[in-house]
Image 1 (cartoon, rainbow, N blue to C red):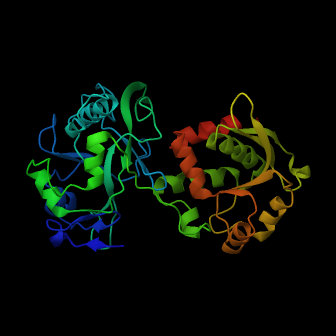
Image 2 (tube, one colour; image 1 turned 180 degrees about the vertical axis):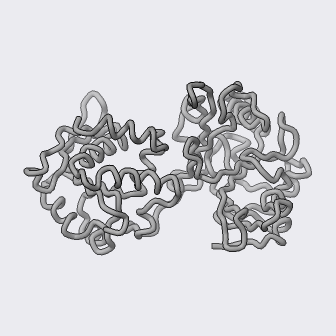
Image 3 (cartoon, rainbow, N blue to C red; image 1 turned 90 degrees about the horizontal axis):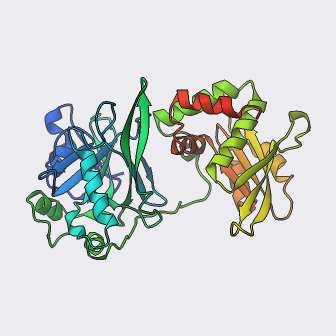
Length: 390
């Protein structure tokens, strides 16, 4: 990937997925040099809080309680606000980040509002390099909302509790616009307060004029994922998978129930009919149906699910997948759920032969759990206790 040295940051463009290096000194903090904003915090702005010229949203993507997330396939960026401790109202935060979110989404939700009142949001995630732990990756230019989400879904006030005290925070969903590179001259104009810059990207201008979302979506180049693409890619995800493996490595029957519940969580159209007994499963740990069509007249498709609680260094191979494939008949499909990953040969054969197999690996399991707010060992423990042998 492209890496910009710290001494070039005040003159370079912003390139999606490029890394901007810091140094060991907070005075050389990269986002401060890039955007002329503060050098710490999740919310950083240029201009006044009521009407900022630009807003930078920073995330480590590692907060267990507030799991920010980027979906590169749909272009949705999920970001949690800055009221993360009890004792304050949802808008009573020192950096006023939640107030910025509330105003921006209010404007988007009002059809008669002027979208030029909304500042551009620049997304950065922490990306340590060998030269600096303070480096960041630029993830894109974002705007509030997404074409697939309604007004009741794109900004949600959620309740959390700690030590018996309850409080609210925002869960906000942004669209990352289909802009691969941003002109440094636009950034400089925004810093100076010129919001009508001639160097603004056309996707941003079009969105401001008519709320036209040109979203940066992406399709995988290949449909056989590498090991690295199947295993957890963050400390949070790895901790969840480690817990599951430790709990079920000597209890495969328990993992079968867990995997069945997980697949139901993955899609509301899934219904598990039976978790089979280990002695008679014959290549199917669970049997269920998947609903297609309209709610009043659905078509039910049968699937067989196989669950493998393997160590991260023990991939699912050809033998295990062949066992599942042998169960599938016409108009049926299979599901393989594993805490590990699928070996390259097995994965390649499944995709080349077009077997209808849904593959859910360690990384996928962790992301499904996080999406459903099972993002801590405590909450995951409660989930496990609720599904084992149900």
